[in-house]
Length: 549
Image (tube, rainbow, N blue to C red; front, side, top):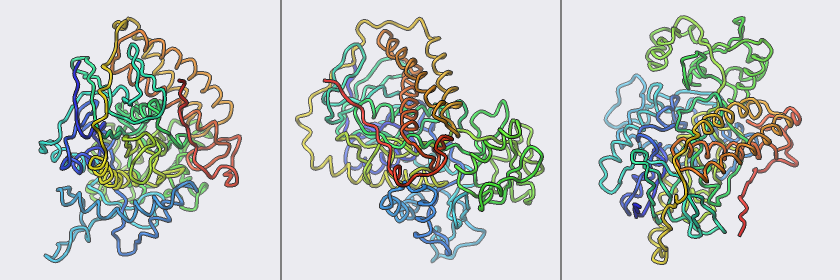
């Protein structure tokens, strides 16, 4: 059995994990684990940009108010203020690292800072232009620069195609590959499957960071890449960390509707530049649902589209930006333009068919303002975490700025922990135990349950919910969880089994959180409780795993 000892163990290679790695590498050795290639992350798929205050007409107060309004009464104001006010500094760090954001069509004088002439876009829910972007592939530009720096840092060891199975706590007991934690203690690493050799490695770490991204693959239709299976949320909860607000799943209003267009998001930035949503008859409809029309927040737009589709029976609605100059569209959205052409749609000449899809988890592992979970020595940042920034609905393009700010705050705190804590008494964890297990001869169980979970989550725990739908989902997940536990006990772990186990865990947590909240707020809409109830439900939904001794 391979044992790897490190100061910092980072699980995930998106903007949060990479930024944290670069900031802590000066103070200790870093092991960076990522389940596929280092560029395979939700960050790489981010099109729109990063929300931060740079415009002359903008202010921190306006960004704060927009974020609070979007969060529908559940944001932590202290967190919102901290993220918004730290945002510009984090953007400048990216510029210093070599990230090329779009600038206005103006030659800068020698005395001007590049950030003073950033070309700022606008998206739904924002009262001002404040979206810093690199054309329509901002995430890819940021990820590429961060990856280059990580690969050139000799204090960071990269483990690609390595998939975390479970966290290790000081009280971990092993029996045939099943982890049982007897009480909350502290995290000291993780068991990780090497996908190329199928061997399980034991990573021992002083500080462990979960930055595995979201869980869009819990749903049948999603804008997320295949890696988004909620691994960090599931691992953190199984190890004893508290999770919060998992009922608030953001469905992006506009994914391209085409049988071959898997996971292709149509950026909200199109509507920020004047694109209009049309129903199946070609008529605008958003004015019926919100005074901000097509620039309403994502929860409003997604529900409006869902309502229109149910009323008409149509397969999609349409997004039309053809009223804009053709050259402008090609310059502002080069990737979207080219991609739509491959599916037979010329967005400069005609509307694009779009539908909602699962996009972003506003809930996750509960953390403080430094990214610390309530499991000692375990941090969580990025989409894996629930920081209090997003509340009941994330404001567009606030995700990447949250990741940048929290990676900075978490790195500062983690370095303090390394310097001030005594790690000498930490015992070596037990080796991975697969005695008595065999290679699976029933892989159909994995694919069948995977498909069933994603389908009933879409139908029963989707954009619009009801008590009966949630009860049906709860019954199904209980049966499936029992099957997975029995299967996991008998067979050696595989990537597909690990991901199935994780999406089942996250699905169960989403269903439980949705069942607890007896109101409609933000991204959670229950037809049995159609109104927001501040008297009883202006609070977070908290889930803690109970342990049997």
